[in-house]
Figure 1 (tube, helix red, strand yellow):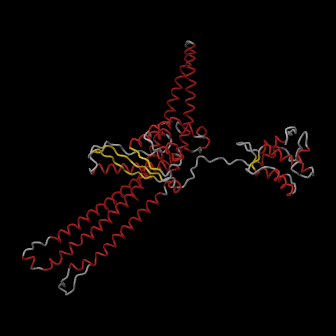
Figure 2 (figure 1 turned 120 degrees about the vertical axis):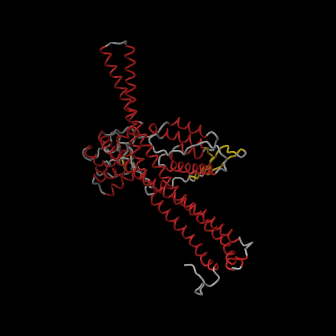
Figure 3 (figure 1 turned 180 degrees about the vertical axis):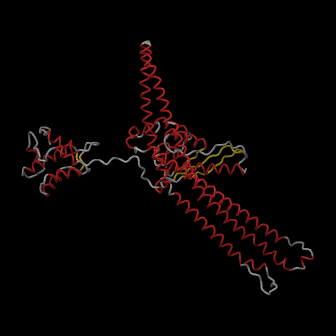
Amino acid sequence: MQHRRSVPAYYREVYEAVCCRNDEKVQVEVFHRLLEKTNLPKAVQAQIVEHVDSTSGFLSKLSLYKMLALIAIAQQGKKLSPKVLENYIQELPKPQLGEPKELCALRMQPVKEDVLTLTQTLDQLMGRDCIQVELIPEKKGLFLKHVEYQVNSKRYKTSVYRRYSDFDVFHEVLLQRFPYRVVPALPPKRMLKGVLTSVSEREFIEGRRRALCRFINLVAKHPFFSEDELVTTFLTFGGSDVQFRLRDNYKKTGDEFMTNRIATQAKDYLPTDIQTQFSQSRELIKNIYNSFYKLRERAEKMAERSKGNASDLLLFGRELSLLGSATSFLPPLASSQSTWGRLCQPLKSLSAEFAVLSHHAGQQARREQDDVVERLNLFLDLLQSYRDLCERHEKGVPHEHQRALHKYSVMKKQMLSTTVQPREQASVGQLESRIIQQENAIQTMTLRNYFSLFCLHQETQLIFTYLPITSHILGAFVNSQVQGHREMGAVWNELQPRLGCLFGEPNENGLKPTLK
């Protein structure tokens, strides 16, 4: 269509009636509905479709105008062709489609975007990344200089080196960037005063490594943290100034309220009973936390018992070996009894089997610790961070909002007092300016309060998304017990017939003793 042909007002009215409000385009489905309304033969409708560009799934305004012109021509009984519109020099023909306002029903209302609901499953969250944190101690002589960690990301295929202070800064800026989200806590730093060979120091360092690994995995699997530049920088930046990079990144972006596209409209997406839902969810999650805390205590004790069992079995075998070795100087009374001499050698050889039993018990302890206790710890870390978030929400934005309202009330009273006791114009102007600034601050705090509730609602969903981890933990627990008992049972079964040789002489009934 060339510019010399004028467009009837009817075209614009139809366009306004059927276009999408958000992108000012006409959906292709609406295009076909409009064609069906013409009652033109299917073959003619197909011709119109061929002449109108709708490959993108939408029609632009010009494409819609072309369609309307072709419909009008077809309704006049004229044959359609690519150049048919060139015959219209002044005004394009008007189609017979009825009143434009009646065409609004043809318009497909865009589905309201559900930005509040989290759609990810637990498997999807767990598959976002898998991060290993390994300990790399650096020594200066015999004393520990500092501890360094190698952080390996499966998603980014990177390996970077981080100190505890790097984790600390990362946690700090992450909390500033996402003040309304569940940010897991870091383990305590504690100055390392002992040498690395100290058992207590080793246990503390290993416990802290595990806690840091849980922290970074929860962060990397979070539906919002995982795509943020802060996390990418921490997991991939190989330079020595990672702390500067993290702080600089936050300064450039600000917190989530400043960058989230729906932050100022959060109220529109919240359910009307959001406070009730929050209270009920918080109480439920509190009870879940208490139950998982007790489960973790039991699991830790079982792992400790398996560890102790491994130690006891090894010592038991060693004592048997020592007992079997005590044959060098037998007194005449003992040497006259040949039974003891025959017992000593088999007793000595049993230490190897008990060492194998000890090894399997140790593996059982590690499985219980790594597969069961650590998963319980991971979920407890998440639950605790949710509890911390709830406290931040109650003590944070709403509390600041109330203080701002009180300050605003005081300013208004001061302003009213100027009507009774006139002041200088300059001081009155300053007070008015302060009142306006305070009104703006209150408005921002109100918006932040709604956004805080919005995020809290999503983080509550995140907790419930993680709940199926219960089945993962139970599965790991059962598998560890099955494997442990199978391995231990196999050794015990091999050991049982060997013990028969310890009793070579027939008993008073003329039979060799057997073990049952």
